[in-house]
Length: 443
Ligand code: ZN
Image (cartoon, rainbow, N blue to C red; front, side, top):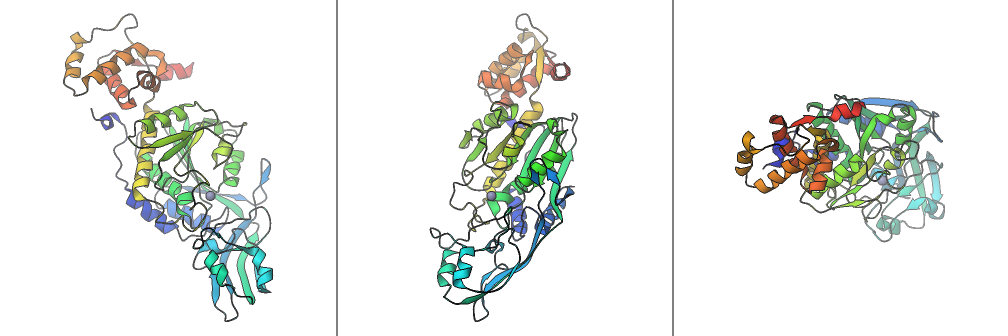
């Protein structure tokens, strides 16, 4: 049997190359937790999907936090005594510590030195550093560049502004038959970093595009938000309706060449946790799951105790544990089109499984129905994996008591979901099953 035959969403036409190209377009933009870089990024995403761009004013209280002042930057450099730019923001936006306050002046190397950040262990890479909540300024440069700085006076310029403005995020809701939502959330606050930031953005944007034209039981919410403060802001603004999020995934670091890793929600055994584990188990690829911990990306906020939403995280190389993390080596080469394709297709399978994870009641609760007289044995016999299909039918008939979902059955029978779903379809066609999902939800 072709497991894809029973799925509601057609196979992906979105290629990893297209997502990689999208990443390449967004790569040069200098993003931060606020500012025009985020707006430019969201406007580019708008060319793919009808994203609403929201602006929340600086100073807005959001739970224990406050929306910060807006940061923008035009230029930054360190010039030597010959007037040459030895560190140049125009060459890489990683050269400036994000949220650096403006500075202009001349200073000897000794005075400049505490403001310079490099990676002695990776002498060719530029680190990525931020100072969002403490006023500071600084430059990031490769160890090689640092070594070349002679003992002389330097001209230093950071042409930035830090002033009242707003925090910007993008949001798209695709309504379904039910107001219950599936959330996809990704962060948009990193400058030229591909895996950390742009890979999640690309997969989320193209998933949204795909779902726009698909039949939907669930409503789908896509958030493109600055990390931490963006999620906190969104939750503060939507605290009354956040409960509609029944399932969710944070997409971050999904483009490198490591196997997919699913980090479970704080609940640990929510439907999304089981669905993702099931999809990965039958993906035919290497994969891993990890327990929730209050560290990482925005799952920290969605899974805070006052919300405790069923939101897990899909990633690849573990957060903070790969050498390229938060350096200039997290570049276009670090992200592979095949990895993006695989992540995209796993996400589609997760959605398909959630959409189809319904409950049924067998119309013959007392003893098995006679399958032979309905021609179901013949239908089974024609298939190459008839043993599996037959077992799937027997499991579905036995466990369809209105309490077990299709995933419960697949897990207990140790069968791929698609096989169970296909058996269900056949039995339903023959009037042997009745969909009881909505009846149960109403009670
Ligand atoms: Zn990061």
